[in-house]
Length: 464
Ligand SMILES: *[C@@H]1O[C@H](CO)[C@@H](O)[C@H](O)[C@H]1NC(C)=O
Ligand SMILES: *[C@@H]1O[C@H](CO)[C@@H](O)[C@H](O)[C@H]1NC(C)=O
Ligand SMILES: *[C@@H]1O[C@H](CO)[C@@H](O)[C@H](O)[C@H]1NC(C)=O
Ligand SMILES: *[C@@H]1O[C@H](CO)[C@@H](O)[C@H](O)[C@H]1NC(C)=O
Ligand SMILES: *[C@@H]1O[C@H](CO)[C@@H](O)[C@H](O)[C@H]1NC(C)=O
Ligand SMILES: *[C@@H]1O[C@H](CO)[C@@H](O)[C@H](O)[C@H]1NC(C)=O
Image (cartoon, rainbow, N blue to C red; front, side, top):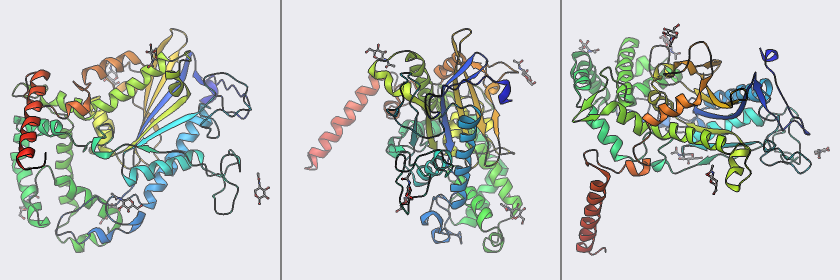
């Protein structure tokens, strides 16, 4: 397959000036969004015999990446290397953040940068580190001792550390779907009052399940905390499958399957996917609003990167240096992030495990940007890695408006789509607006009033 594709590798010196073309289409940029690997539960229910002390790996306790999770990302890193270094020769064989001075080429492609933005959680940061170890940290002779890493006892031969960046979790509206955002919660609470969701919640099946789980778990179970139970049980089946049925005497495969199916439906709703389209409550389309507030920001960010990459082609202005040198932008995040991203694009069926549900451990989306030198237009390709050991599957044609029978699609289709679910305001601002404020001016006024009230209160309390 690769031989049928023309590969142009401009090997100035050690193979780090590289391009890849498929016919007239040249790959210029890759964005990657992956989910962390296997982990311990992030919390559980009161009666669970598997409490925090049952989880000892990865430093121990809730929500830590396990050795199995590290392995999943090491393997994904090796697969990414095999695709982009091996097959495509688009990334260089060794990591170089800056062009080495011995390279005489002045091409703007002569540097290789990978920028990794992780959510600020141990398991996503360590997944990124494990992944980069697979991509650029192997003892395969591609990096140079005392140039790329210290040649000393104790340093793993061939291991080149690559920076992983992060931002504060509470304000990470791109990667963390639980970031502080009152507006998102307001939309979800409104969605729960729609006929479709109300009928679902009140259905006998759901009420009976929530009631039974409330009895078993020692806490009131509703559709908002159901995931805690199904997720803990999912992980306990991986780590304690032989004792889960004797320790949680009420656990059965059938109960789990039913609870999980209900939770899957809840997650669809939470991501703005309803059977009722449009699902309008009090004049608000809760489907579109949810997709805008959850998956909208990261899709917008990705499209923005591609637009800047394209705008900067052939330019040497200082504000283009970073993107010109950047070949790969990575988001290391969560199942909820991929789910929201796919839901925003209305391709959530690709995010699912075989019978529906959330993206699996080390699931990854690749968004590749090409320029077609025949028509001078940008194209994209979207590729999905479902889980460990699954290959890369083209999913481009699942996106509305993209043609059947080819894995390339005009970037304009994605741009236009992204425009329809772009957050109405910058997300850090939109999160603090009120759904029922008639227009932005009103919001400003009410925020001002709140500020005045707070100021008066603080003054009154002697804190001012
Ligand atoms: C992250 O890992 C550190 C140890 O490296 C640990 O002390 C800390 O509790 C962990 N944080 C969370 C939120 O799990
Ligand atoms: C690395 O260190 C070993 C042991 O000190 C030495 O034999 C070898 O020549 C060194 N290699 C480089 C590239 O400096
Ligand atoms: C809840 O428990 C009752 C009593 O054991 C049982 O009849 C019912 O089928 C259970 N509901 C579900 C959804 O499993
Ligand atoms: C757990 O055990 C059950 C049989 O008791 C089996 O059907 C299931 O596949 C096992 N799950 C895992 C994750 O190994
Ligand atoms: C870079 O700066 C120039 C001039 O200030 C501006 O016209 C251009 O839009 C900027 N490009 C990007 C990608 O920000
Ligand atoms: C694309 O192919 C699928 C399955 O072969 C078909 O159902 C669908 O209608 C096709 N879409 C277009 C736009 O041709």
